[in-house]
Length: 195
Image 1 (cartoon, rainbow, N blue to C red):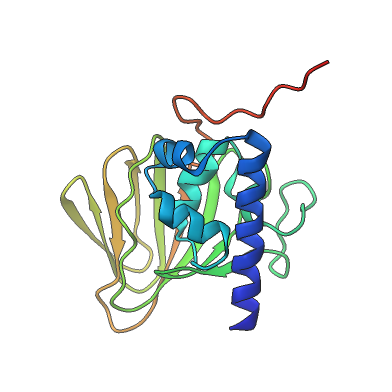
Image 2 (image 1 turned 120 degrees about the horizontal axis):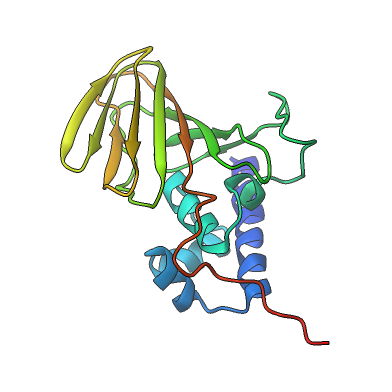
């Protein structure tokens, strides 16, 4: 538990630093991401475990990859060794970032706890899911897809979507998303330096 609190604090520091670099308010970031000011504040203070969806939205707003947003150190090229992958516990379960900094896609292994769902998400881009173990239900634009071990699905992530594990055991899902690297209509730029 102490390690998780330490990681939440570290991610919170990263989030606050990015916002400071871009000289924007929590209100402006909230407008860009659709995440409440109160929730963003708690994330920055390390008082809340961020969900994968929230991190993807924030990464998009800043125009950085998910890996750049939460990894403690830069990895060589795009090689992510099992011992170096960033692993986190979120509200819906445990997730591991498998893509390196600057990747064109965010690759995540999600271990969704029994009886849990991810929050509804909607973002520009595409998403691909592959079930490594267990059974899940993917809801996309109000339509449910039942997926079991070995099943995959590719969809337009600009439609509201959510993954649910209604089973009694954790389900492991591989997720590849272009959301983190596709800029929002007006991504938050770095401030210009005066010469």
